Length: 242
Image (cartoon, rainbow, N blue to C red):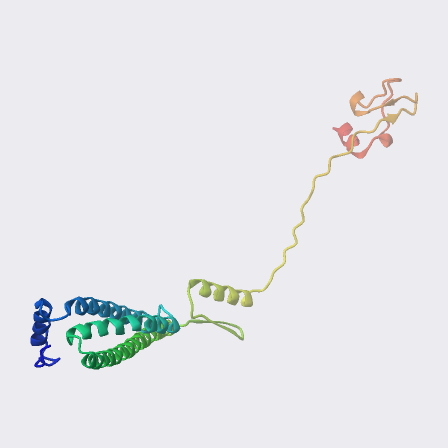
């Protein structure tokens, strides 16, 4: 194994050394078979962790307990991927591999915590801004309402104040009119026409025959005597005069 390896931060030279080691059949192992899969696993895990932190502490669509549980579930995959990457990157040097893995994991944990805090701050800032705009809009609408002149209608000792729409103003006017108007009661008498009673027959005092005077020309059909006036009803008396 080559003892003069480039430093970890000299990424170009270090990567070139790893490729040369992989292509050299005289050297043991193929580090790229560990470096590439380990790097992909680590990237996928950290991407999911950041997405979970975004949905948990920024959007708030995922409960915090569930988000922390999923992050804890993905953490071993991330650490394993980083270990495989570091093992291939350090060309199977276990001591350097553990050191590089610890550094990368520590930096990643710090990065995820910082991202989560920034997400939470951004979410709280948006909520405060939204509540402030709602309160300002409500205050402006209430101010616009109070800016409208409120006519008042007085009737006697009662004052009706109006600060609403047309319906409220009409109600106030109606109340004022009701308070200032005297109630007048009119008695209405309906006359129902009454039909006259039917003509009643009379008995002739001379021959005792019953007959209707008006239908027999006020003459008894039995004896031919004229009908006495005292036996005629008032209305038939007037007809006989006519």
